[in-house]
Every structure is written in C-alpha cells, then in structure tokens.
Amino acid sequence: MASLSSSIHSSWNLKSLFLGERKGICITSSPVSRIGFLRKPVQCKESRIGKMPIEVPPNVTIALDGQDLKVKGRLGELSRTYPREVKIEQLESGTLRVFKALDTRRANQMHGLFRTLTDNMVVGVSKGFEKRLQLVGVGYRAMLEGRDLVLNLGFSHPVRMAIPEGLQVKVEDNTRIAVSGYDKCAIGEFAASIRKWRPPEPYKGKGVRYADEVVRRKEGKAGKRK
Image (cartoon, rainbow, N blue to C red; front, side, top):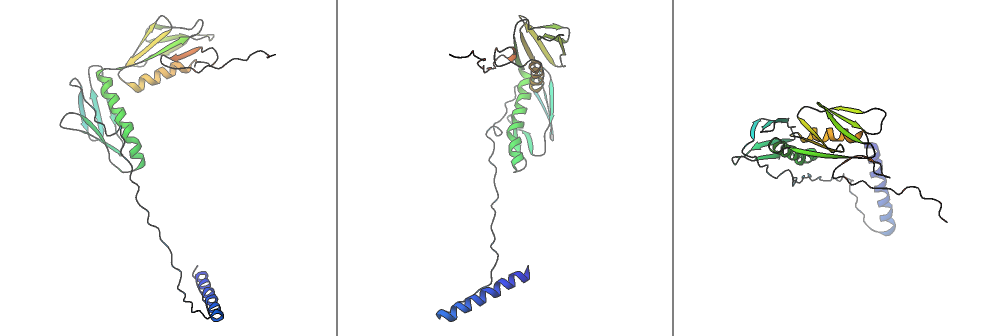
C-alpha cells in the first residue's frame, strides 16, 4: 500500500513539473491525505404509547422487584419479567411508568410493546377481557361438555378442544362462542386456535370468524357471457 501511494505521488510530481516547464507556470504539489467523515449519533425518539402512564385501580395490588412485576386483582394474578432494554417504576401517585434503559432501536421498539402488555395485565385482573366468535355454515354448531369445547365443522368427526385454565367459554345459540378471562394473551391464543380449524372462506363466507371480523368476499365463477 505504501509503494502504491509513493508511486502515485511521484507520477503526480512529474506531471506537474512537465506542465510547468511547457506553460511557464509554477505548480506546487502536496501529498494526498485521507478524508475522514464524522458520524453523528442517531437518537431514537421516545414512543408516544410507551411514555403514557398506567393507571392502577384501588382493587389492584402491585408487587415490583427489580425487573419482575406481579399484578393481583379480583379476577386473578399475573406476572411478567422485563428485558434489560426497559425498566418499570411505580411513582408516588401509584401509577406505573415504563422507561427505556438503553438508547437503542430495540429498546425503542420494546418501550411501547411492554407498556401495552403492562396495561393489559392491570386491566385484565381488574375488569377482564372477552373475545367473541361466530360459526357460519349449515350444520356448524358448538357445545360444551365439562371443560371441553366440542365443534361440529363439517368434518367426519367432531373437534374436541380442552379449555385452558383461567379461561371461561360460553356458547349461545349453538353458533356464538364467547371466550373470557383475565389474561388477554391466553384469550387471543385460544380464540385463534378455534378459528384455525375452519377459517372463513371468501366465496360463501362459511367458517369460524371473529364477531367483529369483516370477510372480504369474492365473486364466484360466472357463466360464459354472450
């Protein structure tokens, strides 16, 4: 590398001397130096959701031990361990705040996520959550047998699903299912596992859908147009 730079420098000196002799111009040369670029540190913006405080109702008990949080209410108890990118604190007013422990992109992503998860814990143990599904199709029906949910979805055999602990399931009119509990993640997972057995098809809309789900319909094959 050193020999290459010296050869370039000598050739530049010879060229400058040659031009100077022909045109009578005195040309000075200087060694080539490296050009450095200063990189400015990128500051991540604080999440608008993450910086919002979390209100704690009077009937909810908070136990905070470092990165471990336990929330207990009239419906149940939930716990969660937070990663090192975020930290949680309980203010003097009783509200909870989630802060970024590091100024990185991953910490910025986890800031709003864990604030939402913490709020779901507080709301879940105090008020609870509910997810509703609907069965659409001829002969599609649901029933409860103890702690099992039995679905008839057009298969050669009924589908039997065990209801997880901490969840309650109600069946109305054999076609409407309500899943409730205090853990929003568990409710969403169980409701998704029910829907997975027969997702709604786009032509007639048959299948298992959420109560607030909008199924985009497709037009079937039309006859030959004349």
